[in-house]
Amino acid sequence: MKKIDLVFMFLGIFLGILCYISTKNLIFSIIILVIFVADYFILMRKKFIHYFGLIERVHTSYHFINSFIISLSVKDSLEDAYQNGIRINNARLNAETKELNEMAVLDRVRYLYGFFNLSIYKVFLNVLDLYQDQGGNILNMADNLLRECTRTEKTLSDTLSIGYKHLTEFTILWLMSFAILLFMRFSIEEFYMMMLKSPFVAPLIFVFFIICIGSINLFVNSFTNLTIKEGSKE
Image 1 (spheres, rainbow, N blue to C red):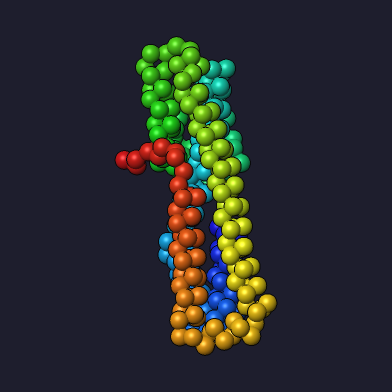
Image 2: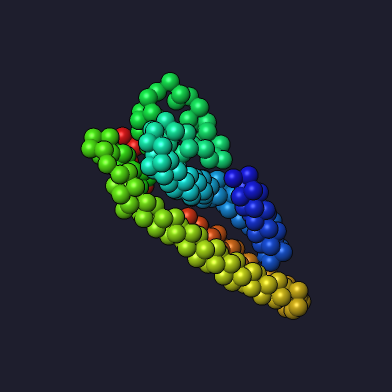
């Protein structure tokens, strides 16, 4: 999140400076900077934390479930299947499983539901319970689950691709708007400065920046809204 924080801090400073250049009003520019930074840390940052956390949990659960089931089908050992499942380069999962060594294997697997908190993991636990009760071929029993895991992973990949495409389009549109504003400011400077003497022009430009902040907020809401079914922590 440090990189995202820096990007949005830079963006807030950029909007504040641009507001000052456009309005020659220091108070307006400071208000824009404060509103944007406060909006980011109070609202938008939480959405990014959940967004990146959900992506991480989906990817990690996909590898865990696939590795666990394939290993169980080959070695028929829950312990080996579990160890293969957690053999993922994920610091949060490693920290979560570090303290679980004293628990029984199935208890460890069930405990991780609180970490993943995904409906697909709940289905995995149901399949595992069925396997424990009835036995049989775990690959056949988990066939639909593995297909759903693959579908979820692909859906996430497609959603991210579309989201970043929309991010590019959104950025270009606002950069063009700012470019037009700067063009007016410097290409017709004398006329522009005369306009600023009007009591309405600077406040209207200020409102333009408020609208920009609002649109960024709406875009972040849309961008971070992933259609992945999460579980419910019990």
